[in-house]
Image (cartoon, one colour):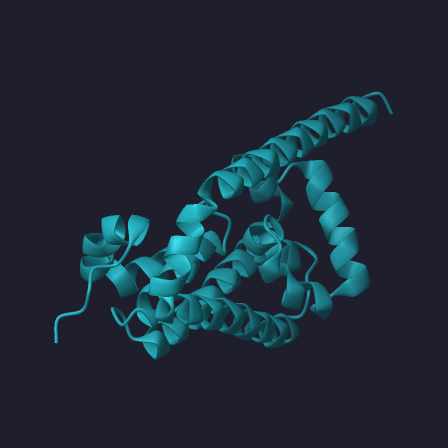
Length: 216
């Protein structure tokens, strides 16, 4: 039986997902998890919605995302552990890892360790830098791997479950989304403005810290 077309933006990305679906999920989640600024979490959510609508296998999406997340964070761990501060100081600015931010994150990891590795996946910024910072802090690899796998399982489980449920009820949800689209866009605009202001404040604070450190 021919399935009805997906609504809205899902219909626009349907050809891409039909052709690259699983590879896109695995590839983007993998590279996001060692610092590359790509929408790994977004592609996971969209793929889960797509699977819930019957266009991908939900189990395969979940397994690939889990493996990619664990492997990506382990690449990040290796970068931090074996590349050390020299590599991060040289290239970290490309993924917003300034020396001051790295120092604060390392201190935080030293105090909280495994708990941070587990919850970091749900926090933008920490998700991408989690493995690198753990490697810099020289967290034992087996401990990192255990908490990393736990965090990946929870992260994938949450988004795959919600995405699949949404995908299974698209015919009900999509009219409501269209009805409140302007309110959603306004909320997103406010959120983007807030995040931009916070980013600019952090940049200003990091510059001030670097200037202060240079005078010591």
